[in-house]
Image (cartoon, rainbow over the protein chains, first blue to last red):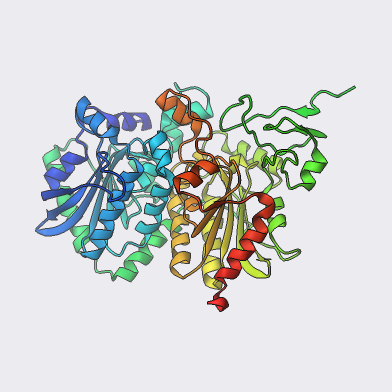
Length: 259
Length: 286
């Protein structure tokens, strides 16, 4: 499979979105709304739920299912209030010693006048800073598209996993092609160059795990994800200090340079 | 006879060339025209005035080293981590060539200069980004130098003063450049948690992944007059919403109005302003 095929699969119509993951992995999901500062962003869904009879906080970027729902969800592109709601719920999780599970599916943070006026950059920056030292386990799963800073704002985690057909990139292949080659038809070349597939990112050490999709049906995928999430958030024997140190080092080692 | 090209026509990279737009350019010709008031300025005069138009106060872009020189006490700057060089980790098309060109054009090894110096007698860690190096974009080396600098400042219990100018994350390093945003933010957080002071000075332009990370993470955030500061670039927003943006949108004054910067401080007043802040945060004063 070429990189561009993964991009298309990640965006494919009919592919389960975050809301399906929430409903089929967790029990009694109870949604909480609003950032307590400005509004409730519909592109981010957050709340608490049972995972194998233990409470966890779940925060998800949701693209929407049909056209009407997609419009309602801003196509999964969050405004600053979305990232601030996410941070509020993470802080709440920290207070009540609940692990946090983030589900990421977005082409990027919302691009518009309101988003800029309300500090899109500042909202994302604050999440990056605060998540790095959040005193509770955090796992992020890329379920579809992971578009740039808007995705990273929910992915400063102890472990980052990707669905086999998800992608994670600093810029969309379309954006890259048009900036670099002034030619938006060179999308597949850009997709390949950006190294945005789960396989590439595992090799680069940017993610810990690929969740296979292959021939499996979604029931099996959700069942195994449930097991893996529980294993990862409840069975780590790290102290909080160790956990934070590991999380920092996880990101600290990323990058390439020569002397 | 006036030679061709004596009057350099401005050319804005971020917003595309527009009439009457404030276009910052470091002049390399004998005469430079101010993009705001159109005054014809002798480049040497402009240089001696810290690249500020003496007629209207427009702040031109300025080299990172010059900024540092304007800020620090004479002969106290020691450059740090300058041995790190970028390489084409992802084997991205034409990246090697672009790096070569950027080094030649900017005379720098990377898009940020880090170091330690005294500012008004106070020990500080300092970084200044270089816009003429691939538009100040952040790849692994920029991220690494900044993380090292914040770690150095944490260890030595000194404040950090940083000048940002950048188009954002460096596309040619793909996901690794995105990860630098989290990495540097982590180092800023540890410095902050240790009680360290970080003052960010946002200059024209500061956009994308820089705004969405360390530019907005200062304890105190100041900006230069009229600097473009935003997450999405203005052209991208215009293309998305298919309408013209209002005048002054994403400029420093707009951010001040919306509550995202503490103050706008003109270039020539920055040293005095920063020294005052350093004095008010000096640990022995507490």
